[in-house]
Image (cartoon, rainbow, N blue to C red; front, side, top):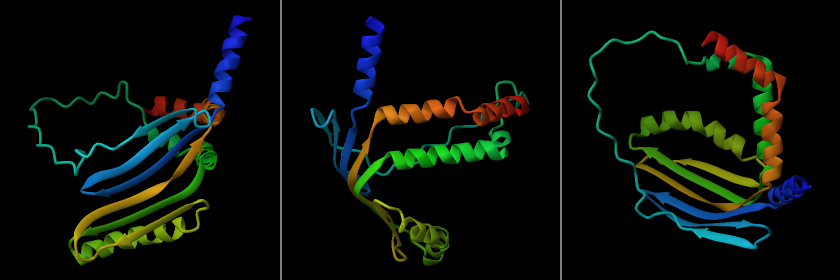
Length: 194
């Protein structure tokens, strides 16, 4: 009887939505505000990004150690073997689609402005990202704009919005993925060919 009560309480708590409201801006440093609500606003926490977070510095290259390279495949998995399987790919795409639909989005806006300093390099980058910008324009509940900067080297990100999830829904989606036969076949293929 006690385990039924504990499980019922756990399901009840996981069924309460978690809401993330944020405003973030990145231009060499991260600034903005993030708030997390749970249980319809009964529990609320505000998180401010650390202003010390800035553009990451390149780590020094570690000296290469001389030694034998092992050809041992023991313990390695071959992910490509699973990706080549069509049923595995379809199941992963369906899972990601369900996760995307499970996130309730309100007034989500993302603006990215990037430049590489050289107009030719920026043009090549824009040739790849420009079509994505057009595809993102039709997403419901979210506004995404990607703009090139042909003059300067920079990366600016400006984003805000509200995202709401129900943890129980995502737990059910993850369990559905774990018990999927196509996923297990893909895992077995990865282990066999690894």
